[in-house]
Length: 89
Image 1 (cartoon, rainbow, N blue to C red):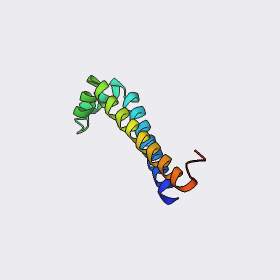
Image 2: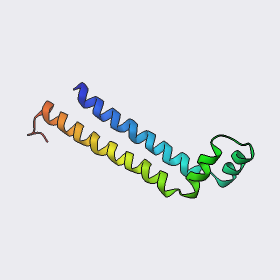
Image 3: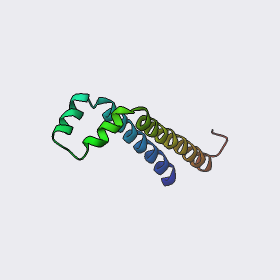
Image 4: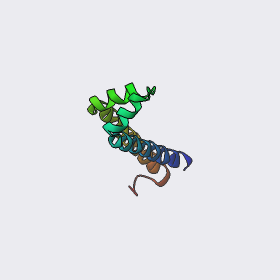
């Protein structure tokens, strides 16, 4: 039962983190990037690269999210079948 919960919560945690990362990436404004460049912040160059080609970091985040869901579903389904029996599924 612990392994079932571990698969479930790990999958949910990764999904949550991916959603937060996606929201942060999409909510960064060009003005914020410009301010960071003026301040010569270490993150400014990364922000410019991310915003110039936003499809690449979004694809990486969504791919990780999909993998987390798939592995979580496989793990939870496998553990549920082992614990409750396949007849209940």
